[in-house]
Length: 283
Image (cartoon, rainbow, N blue to C red; front, side):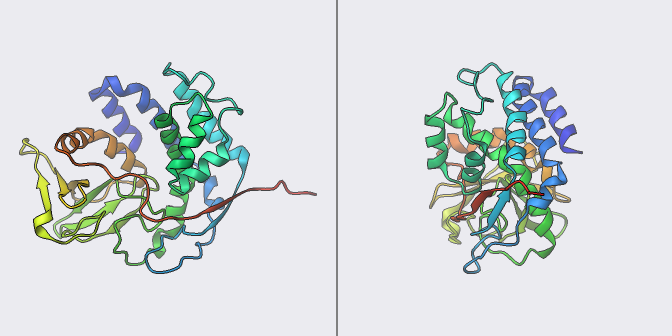
């Protein structure tokens, strides 16, 4: 099932989500734009085996391209009629280049500052920032997937984000963590917490849905109180569908949060990506 078909199915099951699913559909259209492949830099100057590929990278991006991505999303959001977004798409409200840079670096403080200078709600700006960065991050994953080394960290080896969920695949029951930002995947141990790294069995547990037909569980860590959704599948989902599957399983998030666990967001590594505006060429 394609990501777009999965969105249609989700909209049918959750009609109250349709407005935001429309925003997500717009984000998927941007992800499919392979023009972003040309923006992918050489790998960053990583310092150590725990550094994602984007660490300390220098990214040169066309401001107009970023503003087009932002504008396409802003137009959809404005149609939702939510308070405080009437001027969302105006150039004086949000600098797309600053938004992009903050999203790449998981800089929540910068995003909060940007939100404070606009009429845009902070949570909404955080969501838009992630979607503005997604076309570039998915391009990075496409370019680098074949050269992915063995990776033992809980955060993404491409962009440093914490996983959206885990997949246990096939008869071998190999475990893979999936990134909601770039769609990447990396094999991981079944007996450790992705966030704090503990392997103490007394600190690790699972919450099992009452529906015996469910192919999902929630793994929790009593040490850091983080949780991770885990799906049993024959094969991994497409990169573009990771964020759709994450949203479609929101009832698992609710169940974990109600029991005192938290979803760890943002990044597990300080990337310090440097973003520069592409200069127009002179004849």
